[in-house]
Length: 143
Image (cartoon, rainbow, N blue to C red; front, side, top):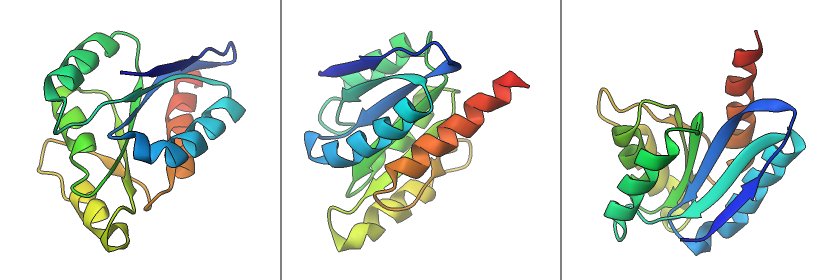
């Protein structure tokens, strides 16, 4: 599990960015660029909901102590955001990736969560909007 950490002193809060695969790295970079611009502390993890379920469960359990928002980036079945939302009470933002079918498969999977498992979903490949949404949520703490 590879991790990137970024610490800022301006906006309180912490975002955990989780991608299901290294193939999602382009979207991860776009996401963290916006987090850096907004001076938000974050870390990046690459954990597959399908192939590394126990590792994901352990990470969520540990990271809940310091994470305010999870941004989950995944393609195909886009299971990652739903699994994370099932493991935490913290906000989860899903970013569906265009891996097949123009990304519609991932988009529909991400927005069709069962009741009680909320995932805020942004557009296909739109990690920038996920980071902007996380920024807006964190700014609510400043009120």
